[in-house]
Amino acid sequence: MASPLATGLFHAAVDMSGSSVLNASLQRAESANRVFLQKTGCGDRVCLRRLSVTQVLQAVPWQEFPFWAAEDLTDLPTRGRFVGPVAVVDGHVLEAPPLELRSFSRSLPEEALRLYPSSAPCPTPDRCPERAYTTMGSDIRLTCPSNHLARSAAAALRSPVYRYLVTHTPSGPVGVASGLLPFAGRFSFRGLDAVAFFGGMESVLGKTPSDRDRSFQELLTRHLVGFARTGKMAAEWPEYPEATALLSDRLALVQNYSSARCRLWKENGLDAYAWTS
View 1 (cartoon, helix red, strand yellow):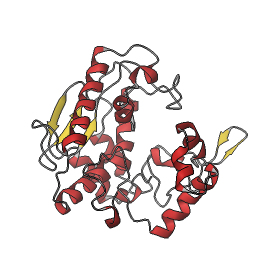
View 2 (cartoon, helix red, strand yellow):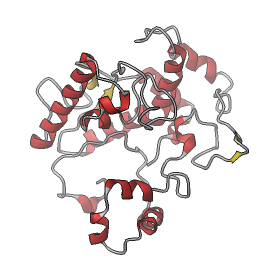
View 3 (cartoon, one colour):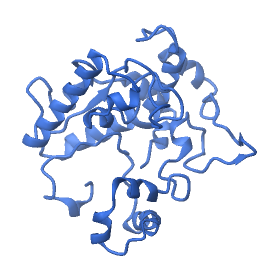
View 4 (cartoon, one colour):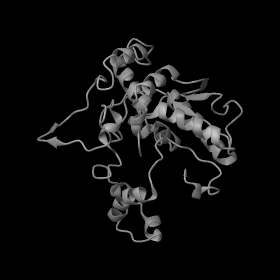
């Protein structure tokens, strides 16, 4: 959709946790997608359009080149280490991602901990250090790069641009029963918006959703469906960069979300380690 050749094909689009890195050449994109095409066994568009959801997912090169689900893109980055496979020998992961940022600057870990204190307000009585760590990784890999992408789009496009972040904390751990996550995730996570939009809260929770879960699902669905129909958000949701919408069981508005944190990462060169997909 970012290609000039796509001009006029869509009247609206929702980028759910998409990459801010849009520098792949046509040759590189075709090479990356050829692996997927070969695994489908298809030779034309008609065949591709007939594939079931299961067949599409089975053809995705999750753990092989070009690594559509690169393991190290959800960790804190190490200077000079970009997308690559994670080697496993006899059940032990080699070169496990570090929990420190000193490869960029000796003072960076201390500066980061001041901006991401584990004592910050937390929606659960436990696992709050985990929340601080995953928020840090999310900001580096996705939130801050997406802020930059949204600003660039708002400056370049005549159509309205909106920005949101999902801040909803599910009523229980998610992922293990559904297979969505490799561990029992407790906080908001990348993809929760897609889960909610397609009515999947009960499936990922493994139990009946709470009233707040349902309110979040209804709010997100209502706004995105309205946007798809009209090309604009409701009046209470301003365009970006005037505001960023925080979506939980209600809609809240903020300006310059995480600006101090994003400035720290940019000043230390971590904007080069954004999520790619």
